[in-house]
Amino acid sequence: MYRMGQEELDEVRKVIEAKKLFMVGDPASGHQQEAARFEKEWAEKVGTDYCLLLSGGGTAALLCALAALGIGPGDEVIVPSYTFMASATAVLEAGAIPVIADVDETCLLDPEDVERKIGPNVKAIIPVHMVGMPCDMDRIMAIARKHDLKVIEDSCQCDGGGYKGKRTGSIGDIGAYSFNDYKILSCGEGGGFVTNDRTLYERAMVFSDSGAAFRPYAKDLTITPFLGFQFRPTELQGAILRVQLTRLEGILADLRRVKARIMGELEGAPGVRFMPSNDLEGDCGVICGFQFDAPEPAIAFSKVEGVDAWRPLDSAKHVYHTWDPIIEKRVGHHPDVNPYNHPKNQGLRTTVTRDMLPKSLDILGRTVFVALDPDWTDAKVTEVISACRNAAKSAAQTAEKEAART
Ligand SMILES: *Cc1c(COP(=O)(O)O)cnc(C)c1O
Figure 1 (cartoon, rainbow, N blue to C red):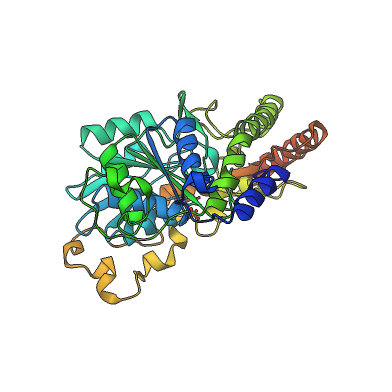
Figure 2: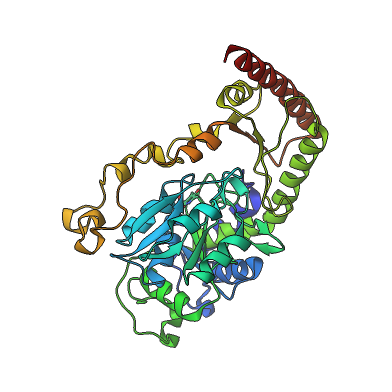
């Protein structure tokens, strides 16, 4: 997805030539403050007061969010049934229990099921903006406020995306981003944590910097430091991401242009029904979603020629029924740090079975995502449109055959 080139090489070269790779250093000695500058620039871009760049990826950002909020044993956190497993594993790493809720027709967290799943031990909700698509944040925030719950937006697949004029990740109490190799922006591995809350920021900073031993502003802390992990980024990550950031709007504009053209030209075509969206303007355009009444036409459509298409149901590690370590409660390096064994977690909703959320499996099984590319030429988009038109026809024929058979 991401674009990368000479500009990143030039900036990385400068960091290496200055021989200042550690994130803390004196500008007077030639240290370029790349990581710290990226943190400031990313906070500005998404519209929050604070940002931390983390070497541990989006997973570290989620763990820092949970740690900042003081979530741990005895707590439940609601996560969606369709997300990369890290959204749920971060909850377990914090010692708490993930409670999995359904997705709705948008393939994103279903606010109605969130409300049904709220119980006395739920402390937070993690809406996940999957494949560049924003969740229904208005309803999720209203539910959270009504029940006094915290919201951690997992915007790892939605770097720079929007929802009703705001950037995803800036709407809840904390936002998490990923800059790994599969995301809209990349520095190989990296994560972003954002918030407007000074205390949450300081707690996350302390937690991610082995007790705030190194960050230069540790002296300004208003909280008492405590020991945590070590997720400091390198200057190389900061240098690459600062260039990546200059490419963001171009990537998003190109993806959105491709998606708008595909949707515009296929609207009303036989067999075509687009997946609903919570905000098409904010949608990053990473994919175009097509929906069907049954799995068979979706499977037929997913065989579309020359196009990268798949049912979300078939994406490994992204649907709860494939989360073997969670289903089998294999967590942690020692039985006593396995949250499923923790005394405070006994009596929480720890059981995950593969068939527990049939509504999610149904929706994810009759939806097809077509991957889009910001660098497609107009001629390539024309080809994709024509391939999708044919695939929709074949899906419609399959649906008719199924109807005749049953
Ligand atoms: C990629 C991803 C993560 C984790 O990010 P890493 O950088 O790989 O740690 C978390 N949640 C979602 C939805 C993701 O796609």
